[in-house]
Length: 378
Image 1: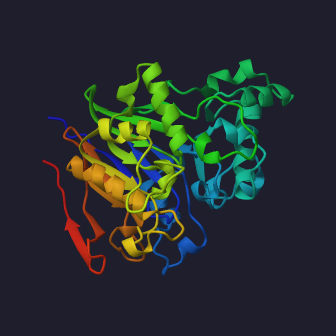
Image 2: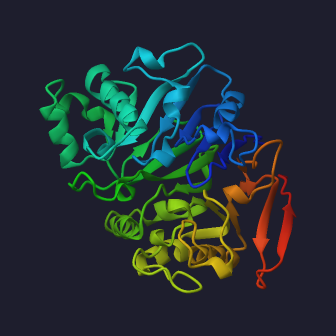
């Protein structure tokens, strides 16, 4: 009887992203990193991500750091924690070394990046153009090819083995494979919406060669990107790669991930192809994870976000229709100094929530009901 357990931790980092995936051999994939200086304070409800990772990572290195796209809430503070190859400034004792850095292709060539993003870009370019190792580029746009060939350091053909396109599968982990959904290969202006140039992927977890759980990481993809992903999945006969037991929903529960043109009054009505993803590919007892602040109550639904009340209502409906769970990172129970992570355990029985305490706003919106739920494995 298999006792294999794999884990995913979705961290409470406010309106931002960070999730740690651990496979059956103890190999780690960190999807985004967001640890601001304020989050390290005891009175801040966001997790102190440095302390958390030091607890989880027993070695002095991280197997893979994936940064989904070039917005600060996905890499905030990373240069304070990681050893970076491109400059001795970031090589003090105690820093965690990154075996492989995975970034979207736009991070390499676009110019509309500031502050911490420039440090990340410098590290990615150094690994790609000079070291020619220790990196994977996700996406294969004409802009990327032009940048590499014009760099004067290396030709595209010499580093093409480090570049992966949508539709390809990465098998670097023993417990799951990674199917790339985006970014798609279009040439764009430098300052166009970075959310639609983010990495979106499905991780298919397997035990004894049998699929036991499918998890989609949606980055910050907007509704038009999801429509492109759905169309590409049909055209390439990859619709099964949209199936999910767990879905890290896009853009911190913003309505724009469902329908960028219309938020709706009480509920966001998703665009047709986006609706098909959630209503035809959600599996029984699915879990939708919103990495964001607390969902606003109904009376505050028209305040600026994300998160947006209307989007949350749609996601809750999807979960209700599938006997599933809608979980919000910043609505988890309080630990010693911060919110606890959302913990997903994956076994031969599938993906299940570990102990979770969430706050649910009832229909009257005047009463907060604390729901305690503990799920254990058989």
